[in-house]
Image (cartoon, rainbow, N blue to C red; front, side, top):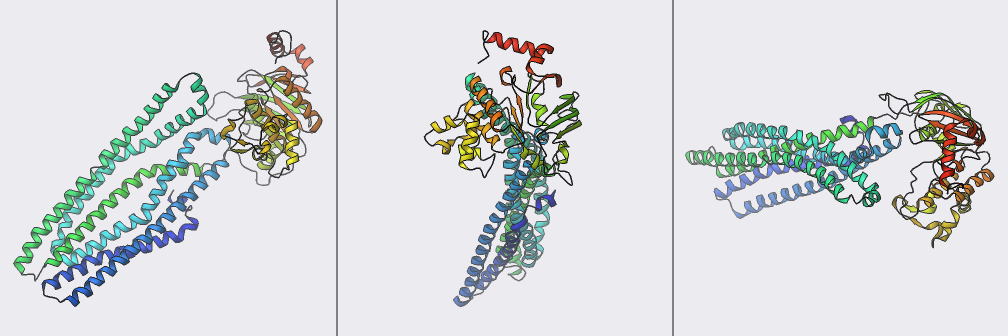
Length: 582
C-alpha cells in the first residue's frame, strides 16, 4: 500500500527531499541553542565581560535566524510536496475511475467514490505532510535532545527514564481507544454523502411532495451520528494534553529540586545554573517531541483507513478490458446476439437477460418495446460493451464486441440514454461532445435533424447559450433533442435511442424518425420506446418480457401474432379516444 501511494509523489520528490534536509538543519540548530545559552549563563555568572556577551549573544541570534529560515523553507517545500502529492493522487483516482465499467461503478457507489476523492485524499495529504515534516523532526529532536541532556546534565538526565515511558504508555493507550471511533466515521461519511447526493438530484421530487422536513431530519440524524463518533474520539485524544502537562511539570520540578541541590552542594562543580537551564529546555524538547509523535500516530492510524479505501479504487481492475490485439475498424452496423444471457452480478440468482438470439442487418430501423423491468435498456447496453455478456456473444459488424478496441467500438455506437445529461457550458460545447472538431454548419445540421435548431435559434445567444449544471434551464424535450443531436455528430454506424423521445410530442417524434430515414439511411437505428407510434414504422419490432424476447416482427405481423403487442396497441388507441396517443 505504501509503495502504491509513494508512486504518486513523482515530480514532487525534489521538494520532499528538500523538506527533509531543512528539517534536519532546523533540528540540529535548535538542540545546540540551549548548549550555547547555558555556556553564556555560566560565563556571565563567572564575571564575563560585554565582549563575550555580545559575541555569544550574536551567535545565538544567528543560530535562531538560521533555524527560523530552515523552518520557513521546510514549511514551503512541505506544503508544495504534500499538495502536489494530493493532486497526483486525486488525478490517479479520477483517471482510474474513468476506466471503470458500469459494474465497477455499481460496486463502489458514486457517493463512496466522491468521499474517496475528497475526504480520503485530504486525509492522505495531511498524513504525507506529517510524515515528511513532523515525523522526521520529532524523532530527530527526541534523540538529539536526549544526547545533549546527558552531555549537559549527566546523572540528572535519568529523570527521562521515568518520564518518557509513562508518557509513551499514556499516549499509546489514548490512541488505541480513539482509533475505533475514527474508523467508523469513514463509512458514515459515505452514507452522509449519499444522502446529500440523493437529495440534491431529487430536489424537485422533494419539493413536489413537501418532504423537506423529512430530508432535514434524515440528514441531521446522519450528521449527528458522525458528530457523536468524532466527539467520542476527540474526547479521548484530549487526554493527551493533561498527560503531557503532568510529565512536563514533573520533569521541571525534578530538575529544579535535584539540580538546585547538586549545584549548591557541589558549588557549581558538577552542575551549574546554565546546565539546569539547558536541562529544562531539553526536557521541554523531549516531551514535545513525544507529544508530536503521539499525534502523528493518531493521524496516521486514522488515515490508514483512508489509505486502504484509496488503494481499493486504484487496485480495482475494470471488468471490461481491451484485448491484446484489438480490432479498430468496424465494418458496418449489423448487430447479432447469439445465445446471450446476462446478469449484473456473479452473485445474482436470476439473469437479467436469458437466451437472446437476434440478428439485425446494417441500416435497419429496429424498435424495442416491453414493460418496465423487461430489460430493454440492458439489452442495448451490451452493444457498446457497457457490460459484457455472462453467456453467449454479441457481434457488431460480424465481430465479437470483446475483440474490438473499446474506444473504437464506442465511437461507432452513439447511445442516447434514458437519463439525458447536459454539462455546464454552452449548447455548442455540449454538442461537440459528439465530435470535438464539428463545424458550426455540422452543429446546425445535427440540430435540424434532431428538431432542435428552431428552439436553439430562439435563444438570444443561439448556440452560445449557457447551459446550467444538469441542463436545468432547458425543458425535458429540449434536453432530449440536444442529446440526440450530440449523438448524431459522432456519425455512428449504430444509433441507439433508449426511450429518448418520451418528452417530445408525437409530431416532433415523427419528424425526428423521418429525418433519420433521409439523412442516415446506412446507420442502424435501434429505438426503445413506450409509444407504439414511435416504432410502428420500424423494419423490425422486438417485444420483450421478463428479460427474454417474446416476439419479433413488423407492426402488422405483431398485431396478428403477439398478444402483448396487441394489448399495448389497443390500450394506447383507447387512451387517445381512437386517435394516436399524443
